[in-house]
Image: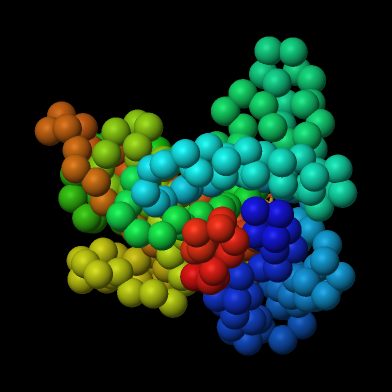
Length: 283
Ligand code: SF4
């Protein structure tokens, strides 16, 4: 767990780095957008080479554990917390957990419901997914209840498209663009955000198995990048690096569109463990 969290904090996933490199090639020579992306790429390379955090903001630590439910799952939870405490002491993770009652920083990145650990039973070897989700980008995440007359969004895919473009427009580059949208259509107020966040584990180059959603992802990515906000909201052709949309069953009376906005520093990895609890492979 120490190796997994250390890498998540210091090495940006290849697909995200590659998307930023492609974005640099798209931007005008000597433009603020190009200079900004160049600085981001330089920073990514330095973090990886020196084993330093990609961003000063550790973010919120989200962990998903999938596997056969047995006692080892509780040992995993303890290992994750121990690794987080150790990495916080070493300065690889910033002290990012504040008690909401006392307003005191817990100083070790653990606290009430922190880190967030979700267990999902699955009949296969244990998989751990971890994400360090930036606070600035989390502030830009949002949820729509359709219909929404303000943005003329009805309960259909056109309505969803309007919500997603509105979310990007409202962010105006805040939350450290270029970003990635994780989206859930349907679900309820709580499940919508978790399912939207889970979409962010998908690789940027993957293709949605639903042709309707694959086409919507492509359209929103293209249209969001035509809005002109650009990296950090300073103008340019790259406002988003990706759009990943999932869906969930909904109550007949409700139609939620939930957007989990992630920054360029989208830090997430998934590993599979062997029976001893060691990392067998990086997925
Ligand atoms: S939103 Fe992302 S890039 Fe911006 S400060 Fe937070 S973690 Fe860093």
